Image 1: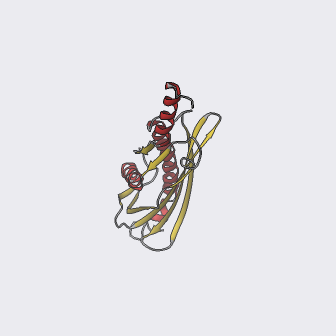
Image 2 (image 1 turned 90 degrees about the horizontal axis):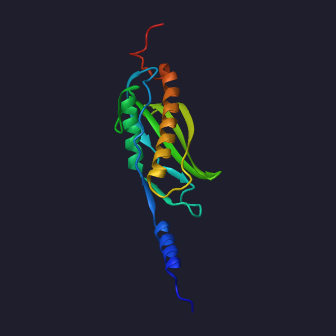
Length: 186
């Protein structure tokens, strides 16, 4: 039987450490501008669980852990700072925005690509959907994923771009969301 060399022990240890490594994602997307139109109503935001594709299904890609709580808090903070609505909360509101988020991680041409897809449905209280919005944005990351920051920054960038896209579309439709008391007479 062959004796293990220090090099083979090092490689084995490296494989074991990287196999058990989980990148815990924390994002704080910030708005890059002011709203084009404001909507003088309160907004309730609800989010579906995050759908992840890629990071835990491909060989050699370190696991990601992005909590529903972190995503919810990041989106709530973003919407509050943007100022499109009079108030934003996870509790009740005049309008309800339900969002589903999907993160797809892939590797192309030696770099990791992080694609965030947002499906947003706007409702008046608990009634039927007024309008749906879809945004898909991609950010290119590094060629290696040794540390959590190598995942966090491109995920945050892609999420921020997708949120900007959805909010520009909602703001363009602002007249749909004015209630009868705030609409101007014809």
